[in-house]
Length: 272
Image (cartoon, rainbow, N blue to C red; front, top):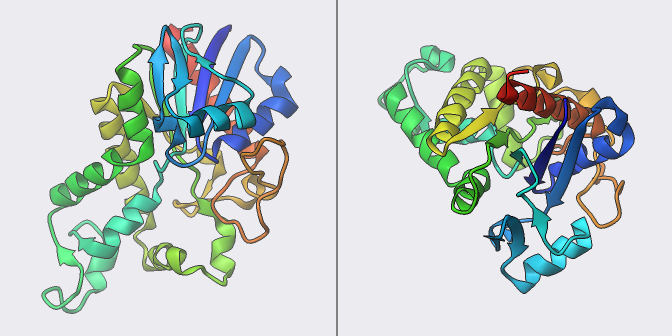
């Protein structure tokens, strides 16, 4: 197999970039080109003659500092992969904090449906709300942004689940809802719901959703420890470690699993 993939993303792209640097021979014939930017800088770009170029001084500075390029070639690529950028299963946990619907296992143990704080809705309403939430995430907005200037296949790569170490505590306030979901039995349902809705939302943008590689997942909504320990940052100097308390970034072993997934997607696209 030979092919070129343009890989765009936020801090979660660091895992793939490190894996590519360390294990490039694992993917013979594959050429991976990386563009990682923080925050909204990926949206501060435009497509000009098949190249993704900065549309702001901040984006231009970051592109050159972090990725070492002034423009990012798209026209020579066979597909675009958008990594992370908020396309995370935690959206389902956020949804559950505000809404409940009959398919949730935990609802069977709710004594007072009328008096509970979350609003009781149909599953259809829950799915529609989750779809709207995901549609506002950077991954989907970037897919729409790129669609205006190119017709390459676009793959949306799920942001990795939270590190399994979250179960050992202490639990940061923003992750307490996730831990409650793992305890109350709703995690399998929410994981399925997220994957189904993310796939639907991606298809509406003429894109393909790629879920987290199954071998890296534990307890439905977590990333197994071997795929998190030693995660690094997206920085101008490769290999800078994430802080010890980081629970949301994956490592090079995870990045290699995703690169395997991308190589397989490219083969599927070509019918190989």
